[in-house]
Length: 69
Ligand SMILES: [Zn+2]
Picture 1 (cartoon, rainbow, N blue to C red):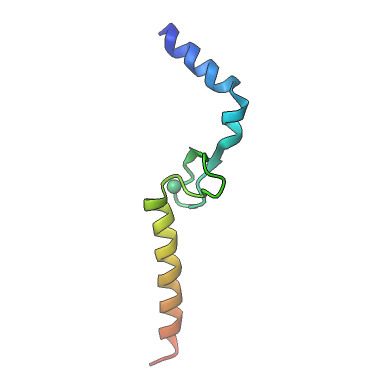
Picture 2 (cartoon, helix red, strand yellow):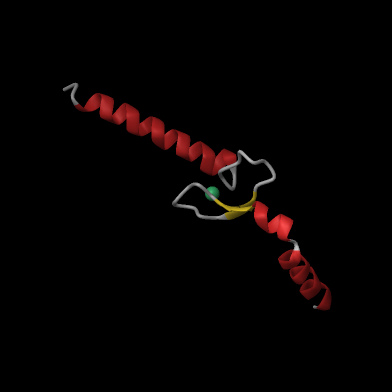
């Protein structure tokens, strides 16, 4: 118990780490993650990052087809 509490306090005091704490760019997710890479925008690039890319692609193809028929 004491060890866990000490760890939690250590995390809160670690301002350098807190500055890396970011919110996921995916509005449907809003998870917090540590951005070790400054360009990182998603908590998991292979899930949220990929989903955002797919959504954008889907939107584009959908609007392209709209006036076709
Ligand atoms: Zn996410």
